Length: 301
Image (cartoon, rainbow, N blue to C red; front, side):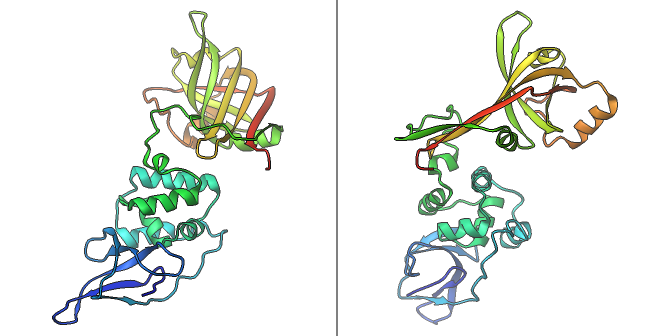
């Protein structure tokens, strides 16, 4: 018995020969298409690992055409809705989508690496899927991460607990690469002197607007102490699975954004509200006088 992704596994009744159950093959365990298979059953939408018996046969369907890497998201949301009808992604699906975007992979590329159907990957990312352990192992391998990371097992641990590279390479980053890594928004840390005179480092949701780093806070918060001083702002990323990462440090004067139209524009176009919640309407702008960074990679890269 050999199958392709998208084929259907049909289980027949031994008495009548009629189809008793069928499901789409959404994952292959072997490159040659031999069993077992990950099957999404049409009657329950559950995905299970199946070792077909003598009462099973393959109904071959039309082969899916490969998706261009440039066509990363076209039709993905509508495909997921057709497949699942689900209201939204689960925690696992969100982590898979984030890991895929960090790798710059399309769903088609990721599904091919993990030997699963692109439609099933869409279902996993956008619906409350519960993949088998073997499916998670293949997916983690395709994304260069771990099953524990996809499941969120290390969310209460600080990053960087993986082992150091055998032959690490530490290199300085230029200003343009630093700006690229800052991206348009994210979470960074601002170093300030608190009202009691002690140093403090505070995580903030930030935006990058016209080369300025801006964040909003409350006037009585620790982060508000940045205004009117020279501060350091740091953002980084650590890949525990590959024991590599980068950091960017911006140093410059911070000031409160007071022009009403500028405040309205920042509020309207912000990518996210502050994760800490509450009334945080004071915008602080940091104009980097220096922008430096470093990256750790394997020595052969």
